[in-house]
Length: 431
Image 1 (cartoon, rainbow, N blue to C red):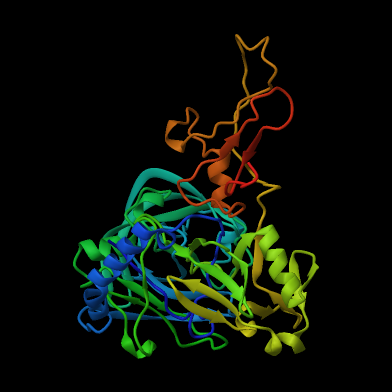
Image 2 (tube, one colour):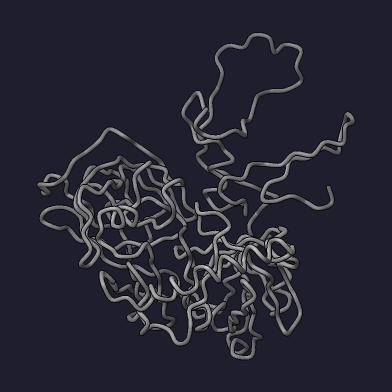
């Protein structure tokens, strides 16, 4: 079983998380659930605490803080090695960098992998596509030697982008190195962390982050354990909901001893690839009203002089409070204006750009049916045209708070006419 280490939230939210919120009934809310959860934590507490002190095969790799918005580190690919700056992202599973045969303008602004210069390079004919909240790419799977500091993964599958859109203005990183579970990989490749574990390069299946605020240097990602020099006291270990994504139960979100969101518990995604804290529009608007933030274009702004007086927002996870002070959830833009890092998930007005769909050339048997077409909700693997379904694309683009593996929920009033609905991002309790 994999576990998630929460580093930095105690230290002024140095690990800023992306949090889709949805009301759920957790293990902590039931008598049997509490017993199971306590037994799990008791059973594993000694073994897990020992991991953090082991020095064997523990690699600490430096990261660079880019304006408190993103953290990047260098990796090398090929023989001889070619260096790239990448985002170490727990929100995705694929590792990719630009290729030298990519013709998109975004590729020309980044370092591109010169495949002919590597003696250990091996190309496949498998292609894939990924859509992020900030852009999208199309790539082809290749194999080569990848190094993260002293760690070496031989014959590592990775992606080479052949098309990129939306990454033009992000010159501070070349690609993305996913640290999520293999089951959500779009390329079908084994993630590098799993390969390092399988090849015996790390002694324990553990990675951790220390993400500093304000300072460009000092942040690190650790593989094979947790360096005790980066924390004081005991680590707080939080069980995942399922061992297939970095999703955890959160008890509540509070301010000044009052619950302001996540009442009755909710689910949270811990994502190192984003600087935002995302949730449903109603709850995010409530938080913005409480801190006095006002909308302007796509952001909510607040007086910079008021930042130090803002109340801490407390995220309670597994019974432990993690206070996040105002200076951690407010950033400055390029013009020196302060804005909130809380953002809404747009459940009510979903948009998917560049969606692949089909136009029929002939129809038979639909003459008497009052519909124009079909929008499939099922899983991508049964698509006849090989397209990523719109639901999966909207989810991958970050436009809903739906968790990976969830599907839309429908409700019918059993009568003709209005009243029936389809819900995205959760289930409205009014139904």
